Image 1 (cartoon, rainbow, N blue to C red):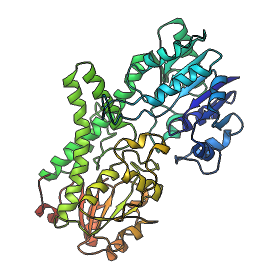
Image 2 (cartoon, rainbow, N blue to C red; image 1 turned 45 degrees about the vertical axis):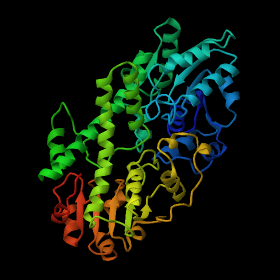
Image 3 (cartoon, rainbow, N blue to C red; image 1 turned 30 degrees about the horizontal axis):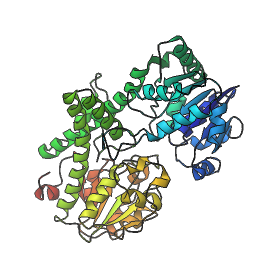
Length: 480
């Protein structure tokens, strides 16, 4: 029986290994992590991450051929294939701070693999890593002096949160990069055989190591670039009276462009887009490609601009001050159908409003109060470090309350901000919300999910990103 071990029981490692176990009953899969609470959660009825369909997959395989354990060294030593899915946070200090990836956790995983291995292994990069990481990992592993043969493969994940199980079951492509040596190619074939249990062969792409590593960064950069492009257009639409949804629809009808990732919003979030682009910027700078670095950096800067622009719209619409005013924040996760808050635009929007002394009432159907308060207390990039290195639940936010439903959040509020496009926000009783709010009642739709005309009929002053401005908002324009 082939034995697979995955180091790291997070958003990538957990679901990916669960799907491999489901589709390959003849393979033993063990997910290991040093975090006891996280492993305990994977072994319980309350999984540590929310992902539609994940519960069913885990429960179908757990204790049969899928196991979760804190005994890291034992299972790494026994495995034929070791996936490494540890955090690669952006460095916060030293060379490349704010851009380069911090490979501390990767390096310690590689050293541990070298220390405990007694047999040949295939080591698979599953985390998003900077180009040439494989080379560094290879050096650590091949200097173990035990005569053990390690082959390094790059197998980047292309999961979208909220649809991860579907993405794993029916991927667009599986990408495997390996050395162009007989040993490297044999390792590629071994990993290919795992995925071939359920993925059609023409969707399993094989490349050299560097192409696989760079393809992941490039894919995320291209997707983020589309969002920044439509968000840049949304600012122009507001200034000219155009409707960004109509523009996006017309542009998306061009078969060369297509309709996906053209929804204007308060900005992109998630654990990968910003991090991967900053990583790309750093790699370009290191290779002397200044113009290329500037080009990709602008994608992140437009995203930051969009969040700032949204906050300025809120403040300027409400008589240029939100001091002491209750603002309801509906949605804190970075997108619907996930509890993930990493790099969510909500953090920057909340910080912007708190800076003007607003009183925030936050509701999200999947994010806990503990998580929201921790996110608001954290420094940038700290979210990507293990939990025990993050600040513990702070109580410093007297201006923030986290509540159990949207009606409680909006009661007596001066304004409502929609930050996450949860389906339930489209179905709320907005007449009831209006009746219970301070007047004039403002709604700022950061996701363009609400019916603007219907809201205006009720009596709301509405701002929707990239849509023709409400006369009220237009009259109160500030420099944006």
